[in-house]
Image (cartoon, rainbow over all chains, first blue to last red; front, side):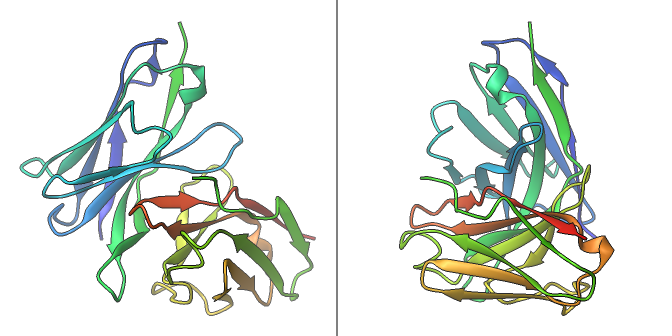
Amino acid sequence: QVQLQESGPGLVKPSETLSLTCTVSGGSISGYYWSWIRQPPGKGLEWIGYIYYRGSTHYSPSLKSRVTISVDTSKNQFSLKLSSVTAADTAVYYCARVGYDSSGYYTYLDYWGQGTLVSVSP
Amino acid sequence: QSALTQPPSVSGSPGQSVTISCTGTSSDVGNYNRVSWYQQPPGTAPKLLIYEVTNRPSGVPDRFSGSKSGNTASLTISGLQAEDEADYYCSSYTSSSTLIFGGGTKLTVL
């Protein structure tokens, strides 16, 4: 059973960079895309981006200028960096595995971490 | 890209059926059979319910079913149970090779 666990600081100052890591256990990071999603308190889900285990990435157009997702296959981990954060970036951040459909496209999120709350405050 | 459109809330009594709609555009829902649905009870992480419009992962009851017509996908929950009370989100693959979520629908079991 694949399990994902987010880790990183729970408090980040405005204008600084938010950094989170997702550790994958119970399976290899190879062969899949891996994604970050966030959810502001009391609001809906927002897709941030995903990375293939070989390193190719796709990002949400609204966050693309501030987001970097990277992968470390030797540690079975992938990471998120979000720069120049403001209070609007306060959210629960989830990592998830992207499953592939019958056409071989990676299109749905089949395993999720429990999420980690990151607050942006001075 | 704008979020997919879902009704903010739906409700139903135990045993009834409810349907949640998810409207997108020809750049996402309308162009691909790559719509998925997620269930999120309060205080928990989302859980995959449906993928590729109609497919259920193992362990998801067949009371949950998906469909699509044009730019609108739908999730139907039949034989409503108290444990179904949760937020539900749709998602679609897009022509930009990204994913996009709907705004979410709160299901209340009366």
